[in-house]
Image (cartoon, rainbow, N blue to C red):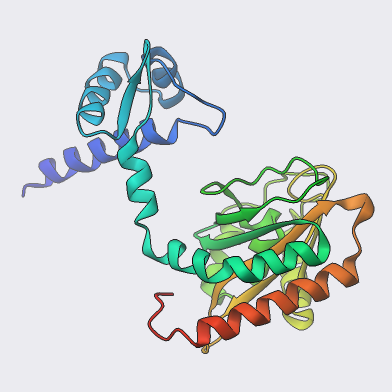
Length: 256
């Protein structure tokens, strides 16, 4: 394959990704004009790509616009690692929610972000910016800080080089302070967040690690910062994570 052909293929993949990534959780459907505005692509290009994506069921027609299609859902359900971890973690997550009556998250680290693979909501908890399949900056979340704290120095540097942008009133944006926070998390075994991901939100999180110390997934319990009992919730999260660690140890074939 010639270099020009490789570049054309890469460019097309980037355009397709831009269109799919343009959809936000609140969107039911989007028109060509709005997709062109969000992606910066010409309307003619958007229209041509949409036709192909509809044909292969990655998008589907909805009135004058399009929405995400069934094929994307099917592929998401086939993602082995999140699916296996989710199934394994549900019992521990449910026990944790019952113990603290807070919303419980399960998340993995991908680059400088966390991806939520399961959320068990609780009553009377604040509106949270997280959603299943959604992403948040790792540095601005409890689960993200827990995962980064136990990651390699290269991963930590990648997060720092990505920029510590504020997401809430108390997001840590100073690199040196963030490094000190990671050290504290490693010593304590639990990460805390108070209004770092958004106003009024607090959480405790801890990473579940493999036998070699690699962080596999993180558990957290989140609720209103004004009612948050740091010691009680932190202990409960650590207990749940220990239970999940034992389950993972009993599943040597689990893809981590």
